[in-house]
Picture 1 (tube, one colour):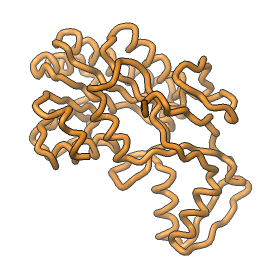
Picture 2 (picture 1 turned 45 degrees about the vertical axis):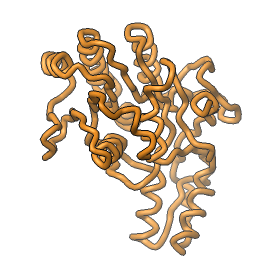
Picture 3 (picture 1 turned 135 degrees about the vertical axis):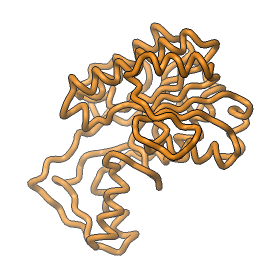
Picture 4 (picture 1 turned 180 degrees about the vertical axis):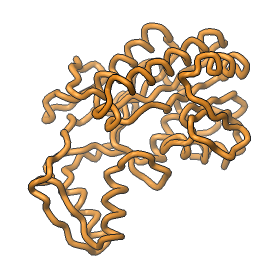
Length: 275
């Protein structure tokens, strides 16, 4: 990743959600290369350059952005798909308030680029046998996808200097706070010497490696404003992925036919980000 970081050298960087799965990897890469940053998270941290407060605190958000005047603001501090499934109204309200406050602060700053993480869930409800791209007409069936689509459109309308990544399922060693399919499978294989598969394992998923996510985040200064699918080439069934992991650890798999499988999202075309 080192060669990519020239984009951010000498720039003022602010990271909301620095204590999460992707945030900690970005912070790790920045610290390896002695690139300073300011982090914001609602969970405490011992880092001196990290602030602990909730982004719903409007005054604090606007004050810190106005004071720091960052060149780049990475916003990863949002709720998970599971949270949106279980408590749509409240988590949407919190994420909406946070984004409103951030954009209000950025409008008072000068020439800050916003890098925001959306999700492949915006494609939920579409035919999973057909590839989708950034121009596909969307009708999200999942609460998470509906919220993310709304946030995308709001950002594009009111803050044009933004790069939005529609993220697929991320894997890789790191500090994950929410269920991570490949990590969970690997841990089960190591701890239980068995790997269980829900339903028939026919759900298909698209993956991207954590370090690759950070590489593209770091390239954000070079990208034109707009939306980019961020997913790897791998689009496999849960069964195929589980068999691969089970073989690696030398364990057996077990089908749990009574368990309901998750939703299959259509494969995202990633040619725009590659180009």
